[in-house]
Length: 364
Image 1 (cartoon, one colour):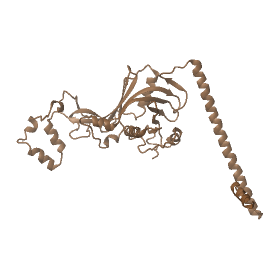
Image 2: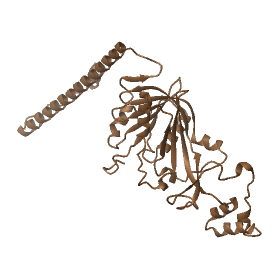
Image 3: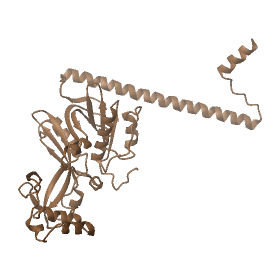
Image 4: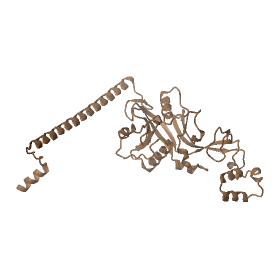
């Protein structure tokens, strides 16, 4: 639905695909939409005939600030991140990606989202971007503006359910994108006691847990680890004191909890290829593999200006033709109305060419 003035400052996005991507690309777009929730058009559907300008026409009404466009060609898969409505556009080559379902299948203990993780925007962590390279600076600003800023003094930690990590590897020049779920687990208790807490208020399950013990002290004396890899010790995770209540059993204020991250997916390995001034169109500000001289850049800018002026001229001509036809039609209707008022016969509309040809053939 269209946004109101209260949330007009919240960045919003459209995520869609272009070209023949296949079912895998469709799932990737769905995972990206999930990652951008809640401030994205989750039910947005793009047809094959839709162009970027079609989405631009409705972006202003819904206060959309960014486009994430996934496209596939014979050379590979690409991701374009565009600022709406005037650019710039960052085009990445997707070298590798893994869907959220693939990430969950690879984990020993995957996190099962309940839906609450996607009710609030994720935290953003940027790492490895250069502070001197202009393209890295622009990429940093673009990623930062994808999600709303946070106020550490006023925010509630219950809204911190996810984190998106964007890591730039300077050696390879590639950017890795990951998404994690945040969970808080109380520390200083055995696994049996944790299972007892998870049983909660379910009396039958609670009775079954206690019925397996000979003495209640076994909950505190026995760790009950099935293997070394299944242990959850304080050495493996750093315990923190919660300043506020958090989601999950036992995660209460002033409680010692271990903060854990579980990957949700998708995974993306990106390479920045070029930066354009406009929305998927305009002068190329940066290209990784093509370097232009000053004269070549000036020539390209001149051609771009000519194309833009020609486009504006054609648009003016079309508007003038529409206006002239509307005025001619209005004058014709006024003349016919005036003749009806005077009682003069109104000339019939000319017959179509097909009808005249058929009449001539019948006469012969």
